[in-house]
Image (cartoon, rainbow, N blue to C red; front, side, top):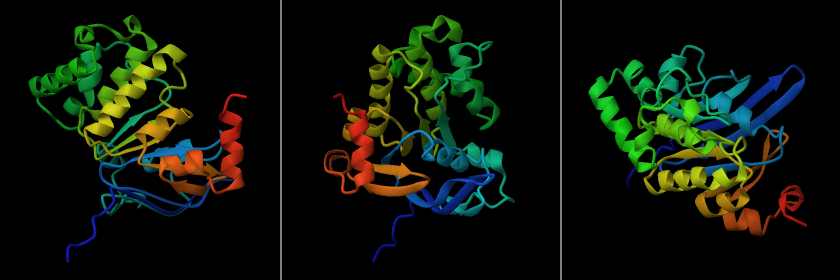
Length: 249
């Protein structure tokens, strides 16, 4: 009998409070290898805070966070070494304005993972070509549209082949006509086998790209399951109320 497969990410009983305000309330969630899990919920439900705790940008008050079976929430853990195993893309592109597109994409590979420059640039150029931005490799970020900048940010996050990819509302800062091109890239990453935990308000995308949708409210998981079940036939009143506010009247 084969041993059970270890999930890439497991959060167990995670508690995070800011003063008296509890943002994550004994939250449990896991992400299997090659799985795409989409977190949904109103602003303030704890989605972004959860991603920040996983990337060790916020310490947790209780519980554990395991990455590949290792307790990375242990204060003795080297946080930078953990972050080197995770790719992160936030709402804002956060590209370095003084670096070219190619230098932005290869920076972590060269500086953190000590990948030889030629090898890092070969990978970077291949990824930029894959997302239709090969001709922008020598440009600076201010020469790119918002959608192009966000695609570069995603390429930068995957260039080091991370164990886990965290995507936090990556389309919220984009004009509506640019949202599709970024979400198409995420769908392509899913097809390529990436392990992704992401937050989004794009329910149509969640329904078609997620393996599992998790609805958060007040720092707790109210409901989770296959996208068709959670988004089309939610079992909890709180989920139904949240989704009804998103649907056009």
